[in-house]
Length: 152
Image (cartoon, rainbow, N blue to C red; front, side, top):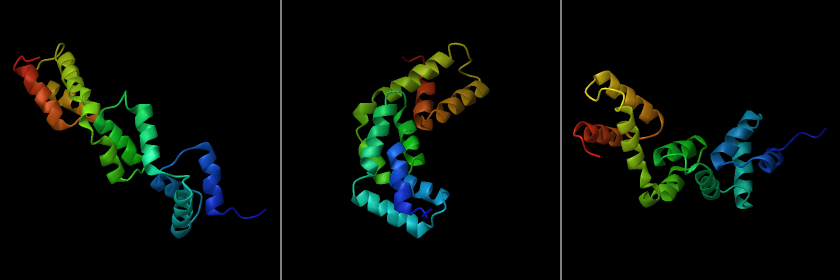
């Protein structure tokens, strides 16, 4: 049986799953290929347009964009190995994510319907929960302050 090449292994994997450049490199390393072999195989796949970080990121955003905040999308894309500049370029349109701030406000408002807005433990609980869902601390703090002041 012939020994598997990195590019052959990558093409077999690409038939089943999409990868970012970094994700493809990591996959090949887990299959026992060296750093140089993995990089060369990924470069070849990119050159032949089998791997495209921008297309990969757009696909993930299309799949997960409605159920995730901008911060959550950024995190998902980073964990999948998409380059920072690609992420920044695709997520720069803040109007596409205008609902994010209102989502934080709604979540905070809902939480404090059954909890004390002046209780430090309750405030920390809501912060922790929303940060774990990808929202920024500044948005959460603004929403908490708005609830404290009785704003909508």
